[in-house]
Amino acid sequence: MPAKDTLPDFEEKIASLLKKSHLSVTESRRKILHLFLEHAGALSHGDIERKAGEKFDRVTVYRTLQAFVEKGIIHTIPTADNSIRYALCKDDCSAGHHHDHHVHFLCHRCNNTYCLDDVVTPDIKLPRGYVAEQVEVLVEGVCKNCR
Amino acid sequence: MPAKDTLPDFEEKIASLLKKSHLSVTESRRKILHLFLEHAGALSHGDIERKAGEKFDRVTVYRTLQAFVEKGIIHTIPTADNSIRYALCKDDCSAGHHHDHHVHFLCHRCNNTYCLDDVVTPDIKLPRGYVAEQVEVLVEGVCKNCR
DNA sequence: AGCAAAAAGCAACATAGTTGCAAAATCTTG
DNA sequence: CAAGATTTTGCAACTATGTTGCTTTTTGCT
Image (cartoon, rainbow over all chains, first blue to last red; front, side, top):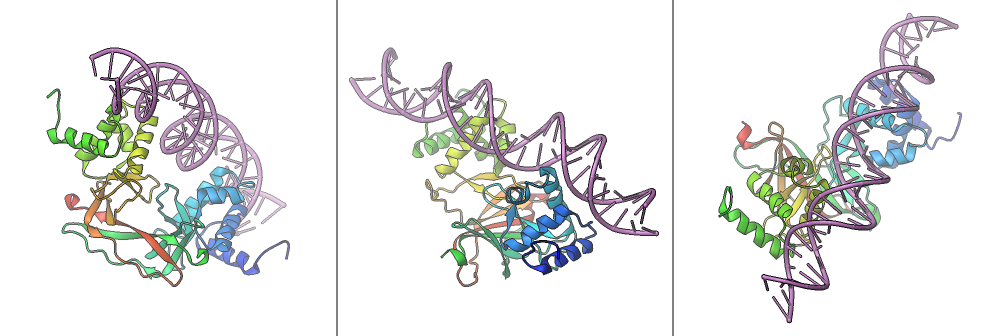
């Protein structure tokens, strides 16, 4: 085992995730996936650039995130402050088809965004004529850890 | 009556809205409010800059929108594509306290965002420990006019 | 090890948003 | 309605955020 590695499983998980998605295993992809795995909450592009940016070009971070979204490894979470956040998808997300029918929670104290995987988005009764294809729910408040 | 004016009521409504909010009545504010009144859907900063931008400085548009949000004249709608949209508030929004407990609808065809004022956001049952303060619901699909 | 394909890095550019300050418009009050 | 105080605007300069094309490096494969 070469160097510091919080959990040895991470590296294996990362490699298999990338291979399953037909992406070659590169240092930046491993590093960025590692950040997602160890962070729990969602990350914005800026977060990632700050945490890993010393080592990678800005453009690489953009392209990596883009590739991950396309392959269904991460999904985007819209926020009110105009900064998209990204979070790991559950296993049942595949390329192009995201199944993130869960609610997102933004904590006003710690400013973290969490996927509440067990809380499914409710059905919304729309006025006549409107057809819903997808429902995004963002709940804001105070999270479990901040009370 | 000086010039073209789709609906004469607009100018009155605009003036009273601004006065009620303790904002002085200036040309850019009147113009931008006019855009909101005649458009029905929500507008992004870019939309406004394009529609009114010939006449006003970019900075003025930023500051005007910011003032309107602070005073409770308009509210922001988060979108998935990292471009905040703005829409007029109902009358019961006051400075600082937005009461936009309604659902927003983004149409994939015409790319317009509408406030569904009659569709209230549902209660979300959260896991133990989480406290909700606000719920944002964004429904994506096809709108009434695009079918 | 060697080759083709993919990804990273670099530079240059495009767009979006912010700040400080001087000039202009608006509001206020006599 | 004029004059001064106050807001607001426009300008310039700057920072941050994203994008594109191209060359070099890394990866995957045999």
